[in-house]
Length: 141
Image (cartoon, rainbow, N blue to C red; front, side, top):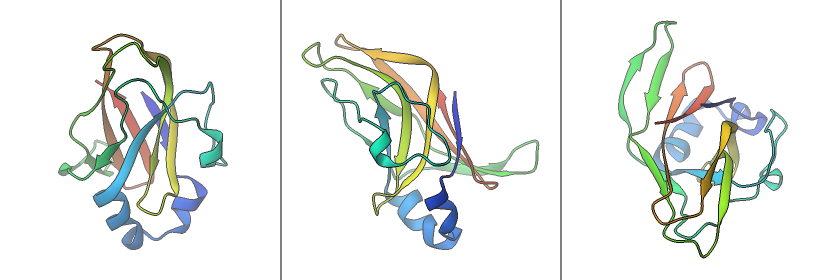
């Protein structure tokens, strides 16, 4: 599981102004460079995956919010699927990042181990969890 907190850019935005661009048109992406994001990460630190069949996932649908055992509200996406369509371009995904509708980097995290995309059918199934305390988690299903 890759876990991150919202970046400085995201924290400067009030939740009310961030809600629509993030929750309605944010994009989940995978990056291929061997990088460990920090609070100071910028989009230029990340190299988007380019494996055959790669496309960012637009975050438009959410499962009903719930409260976790620690009392935080949690908003979760349905499964987000990234799949390779062939061996023409091969990458390994080291992590994930989320951009809002303005192209601002909201969150980024590194997977526990890289995910290879080399053959037809290689895939990663993920879902994103947004917590009311600002934590963001991307869970590999």
